[in-house]
Length: 114
Image 1: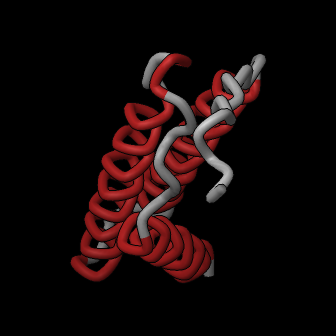
Image 2: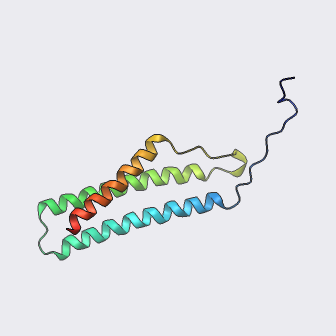
């Protein structure tokens, strides 16, 4: 006997883990938004913004929006009903995008702060 005929797949009870994960993604996107706003504030407080500073803030906004899009996509994946089983793992593309956006936010934020 091959052995899988009599076995039933265990029903997954994720508890509150999916909700905690969605909340973590929301906190992270909020942190990105705050970083962008603070960078823009820093540029405005230094006097007349130069073209370079405006370009850096524009890149920060784009990186923040890209991160928001990736996070929203991941949160939608996690909102699948519990009866659907385990949510799909994060794709490599989404993981690379979120990592790149985070590094861009840190690098450009540091460039604006200095």
